[in-house]
Image 1 (cartoon, helix red, strand yellow):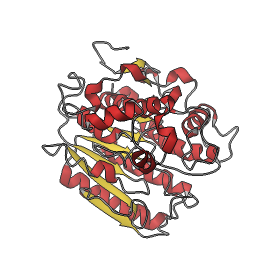
Image 2 (image 1 turned 180 degrees about the vertical axis):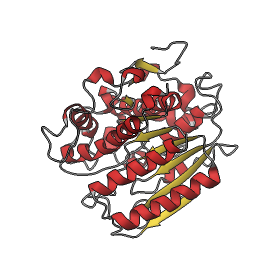
Image 3 (image 1 turned 90 degrees about the vertical axis):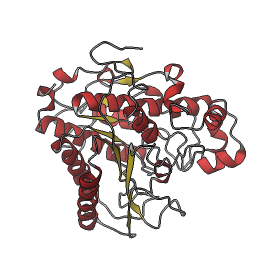
Image 4 (image 1 turned 30 degrees about the vertical axis):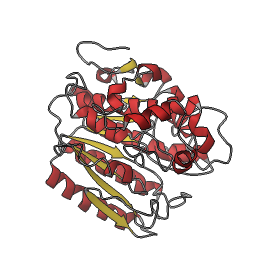
Length: 362
């Protein structure tokens, strides 16, 4: 575990030094977010994280007509910050009483012992007990925790995975098993748990712009003492059929397109920021709002997704609130096109990093 007295970062490998990086904000990635031999026709595209990594390290205007980047966003794999490896992730982050997850559920998942009903509700069925899936599930939680430390230190950071917002305290759902947003909010607001690496964060706001309601995150409540608030802006008719109660729920009609979407976003986020006065923001940048997403039902363009991400990130940074972006949901048979869509939020983090010269403020 690589740590030092200055950063106390929970990382297995430091990435490109943000003080020397004038092109992009810190990005967290682990090569085992994706794994091979996944069922070819499964709705969940397990290889999208590897494809996203490829997009971030290759896409530029020389090889992709829609890109404005003079060079790939990330020059090489070693520029990513790498979260703790599976065996090094502390149980205390996850399981009650220090973490927010039911210890019996956690142990049964980690040991591949969830029953058929639980596995079916998650959506991975017989794949749920595969060691590779168990590992990557824990890794993406560790990735969001690391990204939160980086954002606390540098103002903004992103994770190549994360946004597992359907997972509850004692069950998984909707292709999510352990809720990285709840675990990270708990980590940020508990200085005993985070070892003093994060101080003074009392209120975390989740801004969840995935097309599906963040029902799992909502069901964690406020984690006690108002530590967690949730804003979910989602398609009202979409999954889950039975909605939970977020701090703020904004249900959009089927077919909602760019202009209406962005107007609603600004009003909703501004209200939450004014009322909650958060110390930290976790931003779920799901791209399943895209007009051609196969699970979406909205009509937001790729330009609309970029405008959404830029506005949210700039609003946070402009108010001096550290922000972490996670990728959330996205579903497309063309996984490379989906990966480029997920790359947008990382590109917009980089845009904000450069615009505000955040590398100079360290």
